[in-house]
Every structure is written in C-alpha cells, then in structure tokens.
Amino acid sequence: MRPAGVNGFVVGNTLFDKLWQAHEVTTLSERQSLLYVDRIFLHERTGSVALNGLLEKQRSVRRREHAFCTMDHIVDTLPGRGDDTLMPSGRDFIVATRHAAHETGIQLFDIVDADQGIVHVISPELGIALPGLSLICPDSHTCTLGGLGALAWGVGSTEAEHALATSTLRVTRPQTMRVSFAGLLGAGVSAKDLILFTIRELSASGGAGYAIEFAGPAIDALPVEARLTLCNMTTELSAFTGLIAPDQKVLDYCVGRRYAPQGQLWDQAAQHWQSLRSDEGAAFHQEHCFDIGSLKPQLSWGTSPQHCVDWDDAIPHVRDAPDASASAAWQRAQDYMGVTPGSQLSDYALDAAFIGSCTNSRLSDLQLAAAYLVRTGHKVAKGVKALCVPGSGQVKRAAEAEGLDDIFRSAGFEWREPGCSMCFFAGGESFGKGVRVASTTNRNFEGRQGLGVRTHIASPLTVVASACAGHLVADTTA
Image (tube, rainbow, N blue to C red; front, side, top):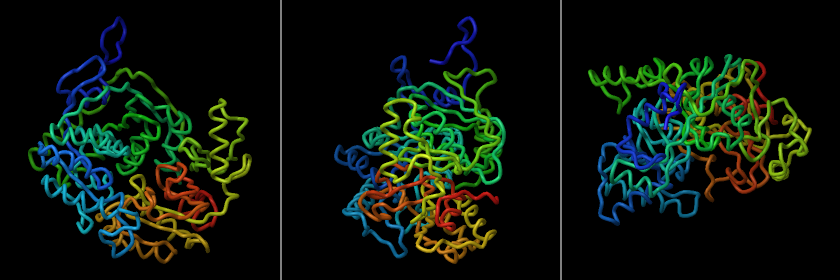
C-alpha cells in the first residue's frame, strides 16, 4: 500500500505507484498482485527452459508478438563464430533455444541476425522496451530498462514460462525508495561511477525489498544510454528494479524505433509518457540524497560492487570494517584479489582490460573510450590483453561507420562480435587464473570472468586509461 500522509490521507503517487497500478490485473493479498506483462524477452542461457516448458505442456504463447529472444550469453564473440562455442555444451543451448523459438513462433534474433546482441542493449534500441511498459526477462539486469521509465525486472525461467502462457505474473509489491543526487557530475565522471558510489554508500543489500527511483539534477543531465547504465546496476543493490522518469530526451530516443508506436499512436503514447513521473509531495518509504559535485572516478578493489573506493584512495583495512561479518568478507576479498590494505590501486599492474557487457557496451560507451585513445594517442601497454565487444549488431555497425573499430585495433584492442563475452563465465573463454582485469562489467564476484580472475569494475574511461597505463588508474585529463 502507498504511504499515508498527514491525518492518514493518501498522498500523491510515485512513478512506481503509477506503473504498478497501470498493470495491476487484480489484488491477491495486501502485498501481492497479479500484474499484466507487456513484453517478455529471453536469451539462450535460460530461454529454452521456459519455451520447452510450454511445448512439453502443449501450451502456446499467448501474445507471440510481444515475446522475443536473442542469442547473447553463450555465443562466442570471436570473428567467424557459429553455433559451436568455447563453452562446453554451449552449442546445445543455442540449438535448443533456436528450435523452441521457431516452434513457439516468437521473434528470434539469431547469431546471424543483423540485430542480434545483448538482450538489455537491443531491447531499448529496437523499441521493444518503452516508457510505461512492463517487461520481464530471466536475467537479473532487466532493471536496465527502468532508465526509459519502464517497469522492468528479472524473473526465473518458470515465471517466464507462466508469463508467456498468460501474459501475467504474481508479484510481491516492493516498497519505494528515492535516491537523489545534488550537484552535477564532473569531467571524466560517468553514470558508472555514480552507481558504484551509490552501491558503496548504501551497500550491496541496501536496496533489498525496494523499487528505487533516481532523481536530481545529475539524473536530468544524463543522456539516455547513461541512464540505462545507472539502472542496470540497481540489481547490485539487491533492489527489485530501478527507475528514472521519462523526459524529452527519452521521447527523442524512442521515436522511430522499430517496435515503437507510429503516427497518431506515437502522439498518444508520448502524451501518456510525459505523465509518468512522481507527483509533487509523493511519499517514499525511504529517501537518500548524496552530494556528488566532487565525485571522483570509482574503482572496485574486492569481490562485491560495494567494495569500491575513489580511484586514488587506499584499499581499506579489515579493522575498519563496520562489523565482524564485513571484516571476514573484506579479508576473503583481499586475499582473492591479491591486494594489500593501505596500498593504492594504482600500485597494481594490469594484465587485461575489457570493454563490453550490458552495462557499458553501447555506442556512447565506445565513443568515450575511443575519444580517449585519439586525444591522448596512447596505446595498450605491453603485456595487456584488451578486448572491446560491442553490445549489438547495431552498435557494431554504427561504431565501424565512425571508424571506432580502427581506433581500437590501432591502439591494441581486439574488436569482437556482439555478445556478453567475458562478462559471463560458464566454462568458456576466460582471462586465466590470477589475471588482473579492469572491466566495464557489473559484477566482480569470485570467478565471474573465469576461475581465479581478479576483476576491477570501472567506467569505460577508467578501463581504457588503465589498459594504456598498464596499471589501474583513472583519466585525470578529461
């Protein structure tokens, strides 16, 4: 239920309230409702499970035109790729998903499709995700799409199967939180730094049980793709989803997309989308406000996104942890990462660099990194393996049209095909045990990029600067 105002009267609606109410089919209990699901997106890692569940039960997809699937998690990103993968049994996932998608009649963006790519990248760029829509995917980073003002959250394969058959899901309603930022981001500081700082301040569990709306001048100033980056990592706060109210930037971004409404329908949709914002005086269950005018680039030092510091700060001492549990976690993380309390991250030589993932593989991310290479004339340091993996076929073509691929290659980066690539390790390609990597991915858990790999998550600008320096560093010349 919505929070009550003075004398028990219900106050104005939050953005989340409006989206929830618009999709509520019926109330099942005080905390649970049956919600209508507008769009369902699958990928080959989990999609075949949901689709084959329907086929085995001889059920059909209720709205096939609203269900989509892509190949992204398991496909190789090496040039000339096919169904065979470096991941053991990877081919089985791909073939099974392709067969199930064809059998159920849903739209599949296959390996050879021009619009194939990472699910959370192609969903907005094709206009499948739009402001005000509800969208699910069996993937925890589905909250990315809240950057458009969509109600988007990750589900399990069984829930995806149910939604495919019924267009509905039973959902427990989260509470609401607003995180506001005072001030504007400085030069060289990005949305990735902003969300890493937020996770560091609130902790990796600080958003558990909440839908988080981001607000303030810094959010208003963010381009749309940066908003997607910010909301992408809301799941690293353990939140149900993240949201940003759509504005004219979002409308300009969405217009003309393949699956976006056209003509009079566009006019009607745009008018509705402009009402999707929290009312003046709307009450949230929890609020936080951070002054980010002097925020510096962020770098992770441990094995959780909350293990983060300003790039030039020292790695913390275990004795400074807030409690015994955190102390044990910090010690394990420092042992795994091979870092020493009190040392600077810039003290550590780099073995590899990765630009990609659903967090930072969009055209603007690649443009930012390429601009650094052009501006500085730097090249990847000797002994550093550097990869750049576009998030989609559209991103790759646009980048190549601008000559970004040549810039990356000339600097010493590998230029890959679209996919999740080194963000997600399932027994396929890996950097190698003990390798230290600067990465634009969203997770730095033990083994996330391969067994024993030591991952430092950061923005594209910090990653490219580190790759060229040969050690962890931020770009201080931006």
